[in-house]
Image (cartoon, rainbow, N blue to C red; front, side):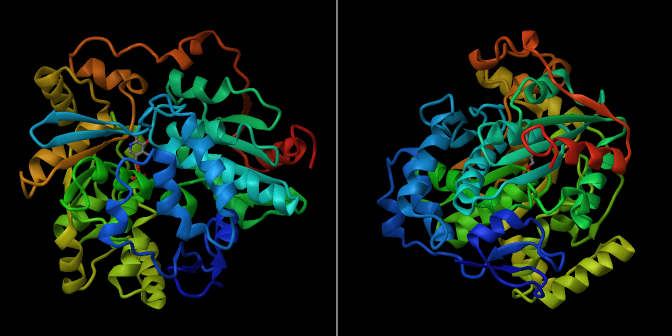
Length: 469
Ligand SMILES: *Cc1c(COP(=O)(O)O)cnc(C)c1O
């Protein structure tokens, strides 16, 4: 499988190089040159497979040429073996033909584990083969950092540096990162905000001299391997609900457009997905595009669903690329005008094409709490605020009651106690057994000034299993 850039100017790469690449050299994002397509018979024959075996069948075409079948199978079995539920991604029924796909049974209790548990293992496999070590730098406002650290903690060939804004992540989120104590794990609390952290990651990619030749790898949501891993659970859900003989609809709590883009790919690979709902919080750039063909940057609003607090959706470029007939020059132009003027619309027929599949809704904090309370009263199910936004959007935007509606349950409610309390449905549930002693565990974290040189000096001092590069 070869991968091409959405801006048309970077060299095509194989899977292994895309895994290590991050952004393409022309500023674009990598996408498969040709998407695999499965027949209905083939998809139907996967009914009843354990999750890791389904994962092998869905993802195999994306890695062929880079990872041997036997290795890939073993990696997948290990990856999904760490999930705390035997079904890995169980479905729970809320209402008539309405389901939550529970994606929060991984080590850090959010769906990001599906991709990052795999990414860590894939990186280690590829790096061992190449006899190479890499440094990962990432910025987090909470969920990504802990999932990335959990995913990389056992990697022999990776040192991971995760920056979070000092005193601005929740205690559970901080402890999920800082209590993982390997010599290759480095938590940095920056005396600044999330954007400061992200800016330092970007600047470090732009000028890598401080790494003395060691390769820098990205684990943010633009990494192709993360998208790829998320395609699998769309197939998994559909197969449980009568697919592919029946069509299916999904409502997806959305920030950077990575998770829902995986659903769009599942459909293009042959899964009969009839509707995809983009569910956003007040940070609604995607809702404004889907409802009015305006992709315009707004202000950042902190909400009760912080993992969706974004101003720009980085993976949206991948959908735009398809909507423009995969014309890289057109995308480069659109993104340049976005950067200069802060916004754009697309031609009517392209927007209409997107609207055949996508609907959207923006849900504010009050409605989020209302929905948590509503669902709790209906069926005793306690939703996290992100999932609640998905449920609200599903109920308002649903096109057909005959088509099963699956809401992606992106996080466990214990991660977001504030929203649960505001909803007035009592205390958040206790931490699951593997995290029960989280508040007693030893923490390790370095507080650094909001200064690029200081951070880069720290990385080069500790980038080789805690020793200097
Ligand atoms: C990251 C995250 C999202 C948003 O996913 P995207 O792929 O960025 O759209 C939604 N909910 C939770 C809990 C998350 O951690």
